[in-house]
Length: 77
Image (cartoon, rainbow, N blue to C red; front, side, top):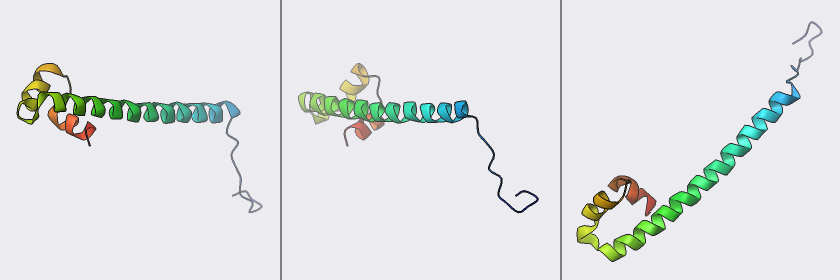
């Protein structure tokens, strides 16, 4: 507050506001892309699991994919 009791609003430079909004926009787009890739991985894993079969799934996954079994389960939900 100022000496007169008015609330003082600090002026944030327009370049800083622009940088904040730009960074947020990049984050939102990256997050959406990450979700799309997770869904694609899950769909591909489900297709592979159907081909491999339940009994051989864990071994096949370990020998052929860089994703761990727990993460694969999350993708396939």
